[in-house]
Length: 508
Image (cartoon, rainbow, N blue to C red; front, top):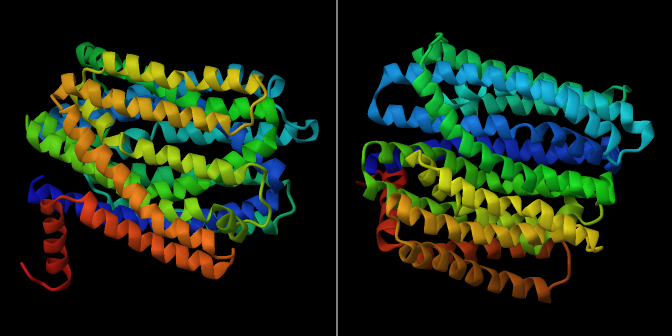
């Protein structure tokens, strides 16, 4: 990895971490208050009803990844005229998708909500309020995605940090208003979240239009590029739909079998996981454009170095915070929440384990996307992900507990990780053996060594705040030491030492 790219990734990651820490603190605080104010049942209703709208987001997520790939590709080639065309055509497609989503949501989605969901009759009106405002929020967000894709492709991550201050303040205001007003809390929560979405997306759109010339819409009639974009997105659509079945499909399945209380437990588990996963997603957001740009200019060796290193770093960043949370899950949740929904402890642990596995896959996904030739990749990997829903349904039908859905997800995530590595061998010439020994095997070894001492302390001390503090400190130290001496190569350690000397001791 070149020195310039490393510095750019490090700077962007630092800015994104500032954003992450702010959002993480606010999110964890607001979830606690919202859960107390709404109650477990209403919180579960919000989680699953908003999830119906999220199911339609596979359309926008597909186009988002396509847009980011094309923006980064054209920036890597410094073709700014084509960049304008990519933005304008992407925006036209997004408006079309918004209309399709609106039609599906107000017909199929509305029918499913009112006839198939397990929701108490006296909360059905509030559920419909949440559903409508979730649709409004989604429609606003969907036509703003090309603007965010430009920011990511241009690696201007500072704007995210600044906007996060506004977002954090608005979410704190939501908590205050939710407690202050006597209006139906569930309805009010949906309205206020819609207001935050409206403000934040407006800021991003205004910033991009003023800052970047390509973000000014022009009408283009380029059938060839339109077909190319739709063709590339079409196979992404298949993979995105598989992801929807894995996440929101399982959430709805749990609602049908167990009701909104289990949805509440799953929602809390994913909030904890999301807070930790921000460490990974921020680094990944910073490195994502560099992988695509390296491929665009033909720097395959640089690209492979980025893929290998970022796969390890994504995993390490997730592991660093996961170890103490995985060990002390029950006590942490008791401190955080006054009322623990059933299954929340096991859900939280399994969701974090699943994300640890997926963390290594993120750079592999980007490398595959960068090639633009993804039909075979999406057909195989997407089909594997699709298995989550039918396998979970069959096992739940046999009377197994709700956490079985996460065990299924973990097994399939492991299989998909290996399949992605094997497929990249033919797509970009990646060495599967090198990836297994230099990334997977080392990551597994680091994990085992990191857990030994904290688990011993956990077993031998009584549950209290002192044990939590000791386990946390020891976990961070053992994980950090394991990563440094076992998880990093000599060159990687040297790079970090040089950066520390430069930043703090002004040495070259």
